[in-house]
Length: 413
Image (cartoon, rainbow, N blue to C red; front, side, top):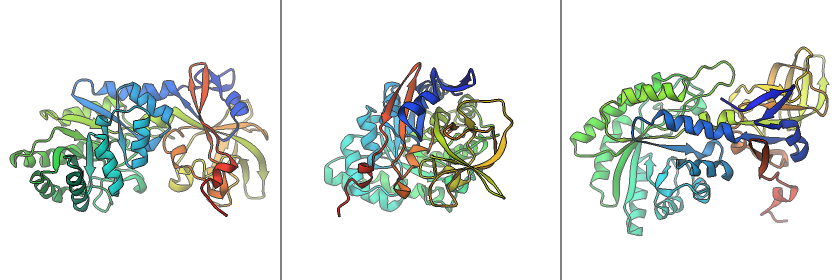
């Protein structure tokens, strides 16, 4: 579901023409649909209504404060992987007691901040991290809430860069070692065991890997129960995919039905960390065509959007639909959509049939809400794009476009 539709041949975000935003705010610009973002959050939450659960939105996916404020307003939680994301979530109004903290490299300062804030759980990913959390908790006179992130060695069937549950991954504790760490934590007065966590990857398009993961987790939970270790929550992470091209991922309702069935009989609260499925189709990147460059071997649409604005095509070879903001009747032509960055890897699409767009016209890069702006950079000393949130028939700038002065802030001659 999304709210980006053509009206009278003009692509709109909800009730606002994208060309109006492009003219008034400039390009490149990320445009988010509030209705889509909130609708996806609500749909995911509603799917698990039959069981005790908590939806913790994955902050890394799209971390603008205005979006996080909508998460907080709905009473949902947050999945974070850094102290900066903790800062963002708290600033946006997310309750600390609904925040879970993942990541293999939490620093002592970050652990202290999270303990002081009173987060729901640290998803601990190694023995050395457990020791660090324990020591810091003792020093602070606190008890740290801990769930171990278990690596079940399940193939999620996704891009290797976003597969996190295989044995060669840096993430989590191997399932065969997790039991020993739970026993160690049980005897530690500075640690409170609260749950078990698992996240096997991103952009999954089948429920089978999730069901396989649940089976492996349940076997471990049974062993823990026999050892007198109670688990109050089961965190199954995120990873549910979206349609970029021709994928047919399960809906949140289908996913919920499978997971709830696989966990039948377990009394623990379920925690989920959706991200891409919430934000992916809630955002587009609008760029302007600078030149239509024709060479003997290729035709290029050179735009003001580049790999520093949206790195997914260059980094993952990923597909994003690209459509004209103003739709005409001319037949598509095959082009490479590229940017001005000084890299041959700077492209948004290759050999893509797109209806002709005149110089100065606009293109919308679809499904860019997840890992779009949040992975952008200042490469080639390019200011990062503005972000805009559309709410019905109006829009507001939720992040101003960076300036040249922003580029050198903090630097000295």
